[in-house]
Length: 126
Length: 126
DNA sequence: TATTTTATTGCAACAAAGTTGCGTTAACCT
DNA sequence: AGGTTAACGCAACTTTGTTGCAATAAAATA
Image (cartoon, each protein chain N blue to C red):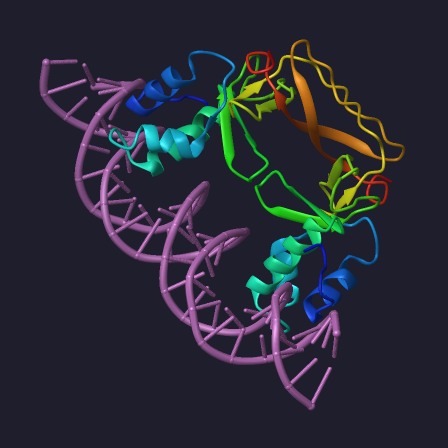
């Protein structure tokens, strides 16, 4: 365990995430890769990459699953607690590097926060 | 438009939300009401109540839809920008009344934020 | 109250996202 | 190269949510 094979699926997926902070819908990955591999393969490869801390996932407003590359995570710890942002104009979803302040609430022990923002990105806001 | 009929479905749903801040899974509502009405009816009644600003919805970590009662919303405006919290012990999901600070990001125009927190609620944190 | 209007319902069929089991294939190790 | 085992493909399935349409029941009107 802990070892991940460098299979065709893994390589292709990592290529697609290469550009950087942009998140991709699982469904879109399946569509893009439909001539190369089965959707089951895509889902399973994504699972593995996520378990190894190479990518992370989150759920959008509509319940669909997004994936993006991690910055400084390991299989033990997902350090990457950052907000995700969707532009209402270009529809792109990105990881923001802004740290978010986890609110303190009396008598509650909060151990995770996920923040999803919408609005206009810098490209569309001009 | 703007008028919502006080049908059986609407009354029963509002009763279930009565207790207060607790959110309920759409799927659980359907299960609870399966002897009383069709799931289509539940989904459509929830839609109407949400459009009128009587309840609001959000998506949990797993992509499932939650509904909860609104505090001070109208059909025109959902003022209720509050975090949602799920206790990892008792699994309950509640609306927190804490205001959240929408982060400012240079060149971005942010117009909505949804925050989902997990941890231990006050009941389970003792 | 009886009648008309129109929103709401039930049903059955569908759609989309994601999962599972299992026999086959292909990475990796030696 | 050969063996071991993770990864794959396929088909079938599950779950959540949606749609069209004929039937029903609120509300409005007479």
